[in-house]
Image (cartoon, rainbow, N blue to C red; front, side, top):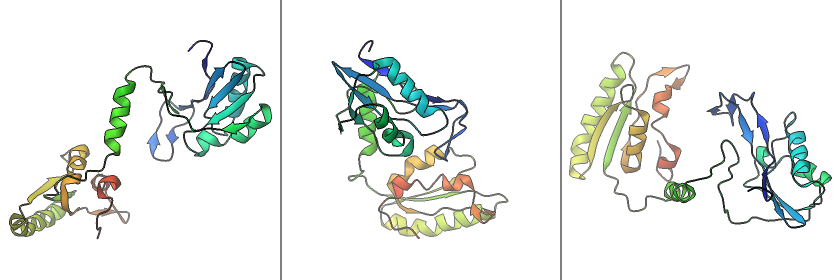
Length: 226
């Protein structure tokens, strides 16, 4: 918003792995925003204390508001890439108190800033956060990865052995080859699982990546795992 909301974050174009697990071939941004409120200002987020990021943040704040005092800092959460420069910002500006306000726009912490679809995004987050308390768990799922067919034989034998018991309980049994089936299709079935049996050979003392794709922590939360 010209004259009111200013982007004052930092760019990190050299970053190639974000938070250990996410590839970032184009780098990332540490987004921060200044909201001018008359003779005061609010800083939304700080940046990661890395290389020139802090200097970028301070310089952009100065460009946006000069010596206008910052009366509030709002942090989405306290991971270092959101909060580690807050103390240093306090040495440059007049910080009086902190505040956690309700969101009014989609000014994200990393990557592109959303200027449309706000209601849709909120709806998606609300949907993702819901527990499937009414979901019927009526599936015995046996996803497997097999290099030479032996793990496949074991998985099919496990599925066959479970079929009689599952039929009595009104449950379905599905045996799925994860080499030829997209991981997303398997993960979509996990909330229905009464029993989950994952088959995989080992490489370097670990299951293959495709097998780990069938063990979504969210879907397995609260289950007995053996």
